[in-house]
Length: 247
Length: 243
Image: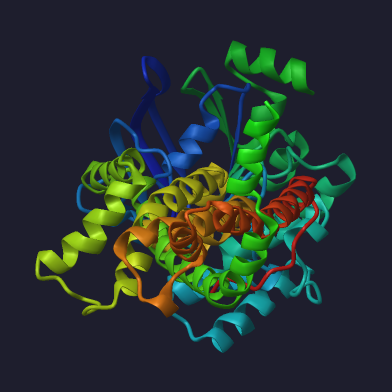
């Protein structure tokens, strides 16, 4: 389907329910390597659950998920190994509150990558500089603004040098004036060719940055299209209805 | 009526008896009580941490034995556990401390307290937000690494006040070791008061002991409560990094 071969993420008839409530129904979606795929939809539509399946924070009940050609849902695949290849950024940042900014980024490098402390810290400093947070290494997360915290969280995920980055409503918890700085980092990442899946309510970001936009409603992908078509010529009536409400 | 009051006064509050008992209580008993309390607490905290980690793993094979351990040690009268450990272990040929009653005493109180410490730590670990765990796991950390580097340091920090409160209870609990029979210089405060009370056929030495316990526990309790209020008030406490 995609020209980028196996670098992307493929959801192949993925289904999942919470108790008796179906959340995802036979979702088929390909996020091509090197591209940004935005997922939009009403709250409770299953978009976050789909995203969380891509690093197995949620396990699908049926279907397959492939990351960079590896079927991560196959039996015997190490969950921990999958997660080192897929970085995730959460709505509420989830920085480790007991650690400094530097240690937030360096911890997994030391414990998962088994890097010596000096090497891990050097890499962590570089990643913090990439998100324009050089000089903040010694601070506590609680001393930073929401936008700064989210940029630390992005640096923490990027430090593991993942093939894919997942963003789960990364700007929804931020004050409006702080959204831009986080979106700026995400734009730069997209421009650098990172494979990204972005669950978002930022329609402008989706239009300007994404190569394709998916609309999920009630656990189904109802539309997948390049942004121009998605926003200017939506096909599915439920998407038209949704866009009328949010735009 | 007044006769009754007088009898109570002379049996429990004889100033001369209290003055006579105090020096030995303070010189011998107090250091022993504190040493036993510290040793027992170290044992209790180390074991309690491990048991609490077991309680929150989510693996039934680990959780169930840990739960049984806590329930049994909290459910038995402490006096029985002190006998079982202090006299049972040497009888069973497990004389790990030789003939030194002190070691068994510290172990017995430590084991009892580990069950209470475990429950305190468990509450702390469970108070760590799910998002912290998900963030750690999403970087590839294993369950064990997440426990060691995220849950334990954050959870333990939040329960410092109740832990200190439990230490105050340990101080009182050490009085039970008089059951095991300690040598003259090993006796903690209660044993000294008890011996003096028997020798003089008067309970005033135990009142003296009670006063010393109160002097230790009441200010400590107020200090812990103040500390707890400060932590709950959201003031950050700068503590050493857990590494």
